[in-house]
Picture 1 (cartoon, rainbow, N blue to C red):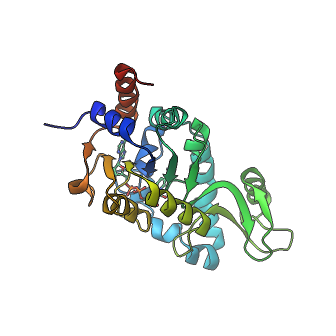
Picture 2 (picture 1 turned 90 degrees about the horizontal axis):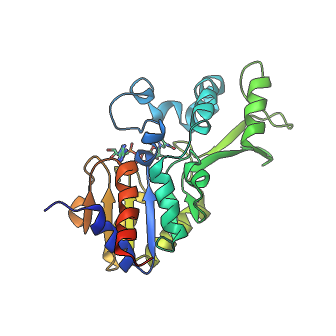
Length: 253
Ligand code: NAD
């Protein structure tokens, strides 16, 4: 018989240290296309190319022509019921941390406190030469003021947003925190990730190898489906509020 939101509710209620790992699929219902589902911006643009360190360095104008309007798009949308339900689970003490591959800030906007952004985020920019940091708004303003659309630091070097590009190192403090939570977790819930992007794709395996349990709520198949104790399909924005309802019906929190 297919698993239900009530099965996921029970798993979370039984957990001592539950972490949520999210990918692009948790934000599609906010209007942000993921990389792998059909349609959208990624059919015309290869993310490995327009979002790469190589393009940023060798053709900054092209990089910023793509990246600047994308910042507005990503920062202009609102959290959906999936982000809100995940924040609610943390608020109730049923989730200890949220590890996200997303750069869109939607978990933070929904109220998640313990948020680990392993691919960086759009909330700041830095100069790669002198290390000067500015807010995301300041970065956008500098891009808009520049004739060639490339935001620059006062030292003259071009600035980069806090998003990790292809070909760039992931932030070591975030990766360390993510693996530390996986080491301690007895439940990991994956929402909206194909689990094809390393290194976070290793986290479910770590939890399972330590004797913990895995739940997956993602529309497509993932390489970890056979290890999942609870496997839900369908829309995260529909299923996760049902998990909260199931918890309420169990009347324990
Ligand atoms: P992915 O595109 O590989 O996989 C997304 C998964 O979510 C797919 O399996 C899809 O079937 C599923 N999905 C889509 N909509 C869903 C919904 N409403 N409910 C449940 N499942 C849904 O994404 P990934 O695993 O995150 O890896 C791709 C990379 O893309 C990551 O590095 C991420 O940083 C980046 N990315 C981020 C954003 C963002 O910040 N919102 C958007 C696009 C890509």
